[in-house]
Structure formats: structure tokens, C-alpha cells
Length: 328
Image (cartoon, rainbow, N blue to C red):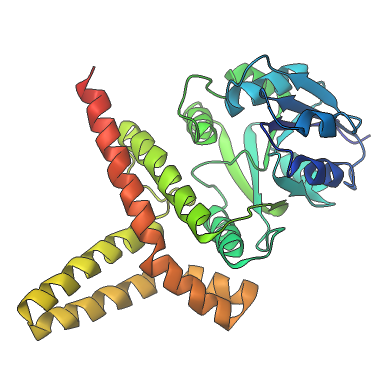
């Protein structure tokens, strides 16, 4: 008999997406499952929506964060395997079957999946983000972290690990969890066939705010963890090269306009070409997923505007880290 899988979904004001999320879970081709939704003090209509489905609803008294919600769901679970996902993600029909298959023989591992290349809302900025995450998270079979939008783990291992940190940053608890387990000798394994479709609803401003926020917290965590330059999923060396190239190019262009020295234009061209070469595999991913016009637009956005938000977030994160260390 197939192992029982406990699907654990934290929810906070997910009224716009939780119905699609649960419909997808219960349309799974994997039948031996239980679904546990932990509501983190929602103030919208999402609890009413959740109650329409045959799942276990756990309600926290007040908003406590996704880590506590996931831990609460794990405590309520009875499955052999825990599968974590989010309230704005849609499992594919074979997602759980692929997770169980990938975990077989790897009880000492955390198994990860990623987003489908094409998101549920197939618009430019949402597609950009979904392709970017898919590419970044699947580059390595043994990644730096496993994200909680698609994470499979044996229940005993999760409970024994102490679960996700509840007194941590608002995001990146899955990164801390992954690093902690790896230091304890457990493996992190990426399975690109474990896919969930994300509902982004990104506009230009939402995309830039997301980039700023994630970069801010990632920089704070990386400085504390002393791995700022690590090739870590979406915080990849390619993205870091992209940000460095953007600011180097901007200053080079400024100096050229002030001095008129032609050598600076040659340097600018070199910086752009270096960035294109560094990002070539991501650009190919844009092209293979959505064709040439999209790849052209996505590359321009990735090189000319996205790094401004990431860089600003990194600067803010570094400043917060320095201030917090100075206050100790």
C-alpha cells in the first residue's frame, strides 16, 4: 500500500487562492493522503472556503507566522511523509506520486520540487518569476536549500529536527531549516519532476517589491551565516553578477558622460557582454519556456531594472545587519 502523505498548507488571508490550491490537492492522482490547513489568524473569508473541503483545519489564535503554522500542521499529521506547500500553489496531478517516488530510499534526505515554468496567471512578470525560480532551483541535484512550496520529508525526521524556526526572519525559514539539517548530516535532493504551479498575480511593482524584500532578508541572513557569495537557489551567483554588473555599468556610464572618455564605453560594453555570458543559461530558459519575444523582454528586465530592486534590498539588508550587530 502507498505511504500516507500529509499535505500541510499554511494559510493567511489566502481567500483569493486557497480554493484553487485545495481543488488541485484533491484532484491529485495520489489517493492515500490527508490534507491539513493551518490558518494563521486570517481576517478574510479563507476559513469559510477551507471548511468546504474534506481537510483538517487548524486555527491559530493569532497570526504567528508561516513557520509556526507549518509546525502546528506537522504535529496534527499522521502521515508517513510530510509534503509542505503554500496556499497560492497548485499541485499537479502527479506531484505527490513523484515526491513519494523520489523519497523512496532517501529517508535521510529532504526532497524538493519547484514551480512549473508557466504560472497559473501567465502574464509577463509572473512568468518571469516562475521561470527564474524554476531555473534557479533546479540547477543542482543537491541544492543549497529546499523551498517549502514543494518539500517532502519523512515525518519522523521532521519532528526529530525540531521543525522550522519560529523566532526567525519573516521569510527564509526553509533555508535555515535546510542548512541545519545538512549540517546534521542529512541530504538535500532536488527532483525537478516535483512541480507546483504558483499563482503570482505579479505586476511590475509587485515584482520589484518581491525582489527588494527577499534580497533584504537574504542579505541579513547571508551576512550572519557568512555565505553571502554562495550559489544558493534564486540567490545565485548569476543574480549577484547581474546586480554587480548593473551598478558597475551605471557608474561607468555616468563617468563617461562626465568625462567623455571613449575607453569607458568599451568598458561598458565589456560589462554588458560579461553579464550576458554569465546569464546565458537563464536566458535560454526564458526562450525555451516562452519564445524569443518574451526572452528578449525578460532579459532586458532582468539586466536593466530587476537588479536595481535586488541591489537596493541588499543595501537595506546590510544596513539592518550592521545596526543589529552594533546594538548587541
